[in-house]
Image 1 (cartoon, rainbow, N blue to C red):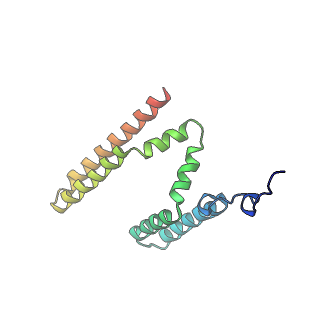
Image 2: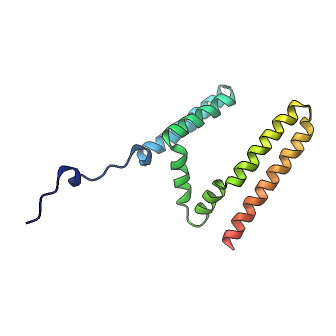
Image 3: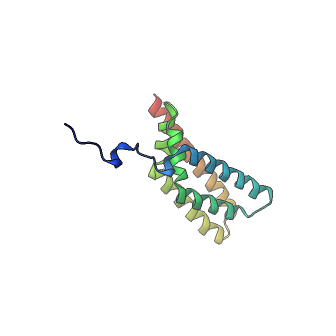
Amino acid sequence: MPEPLDDASQTPGRTPWWRNWGVMLPLWCAIGGLVWLGLRFNVDRGVIAASVVVVGLITNAFAWLLGIIALVPIIGPIIIKVLSIGFIWLLNAVGYLVSYVAIRRGYSKDVLTYRGLTIAVIIGIVIGFVLGKLL
């Protein structure tokens, strides 16, 4: 005769709260609503951005959103791969560092041109990556 199951194995496993769409969807709605209110009442954009980053990192909201994007057939996994390419992050970080130094030295017009070229290169890399994966 088989042994009876203990209490832990008889109850269905509960998913952690950060994987539960019933928690994350209202959280993202709240984040969006608070950002809208912040912009409407002219709160400093740096404060809004920092708040979203802190809340997103503490609650794993960014990971959940990336998971939702990855569920879109064909294009979703490609978008996630592009967003997670370290080279893009490194290129963008170096661009911000160089921009900061150049603005401090008075080259603000040149920085504008440089950042435009950098964004064009990043967009070109992303489009090339997506087309390469699709074809």
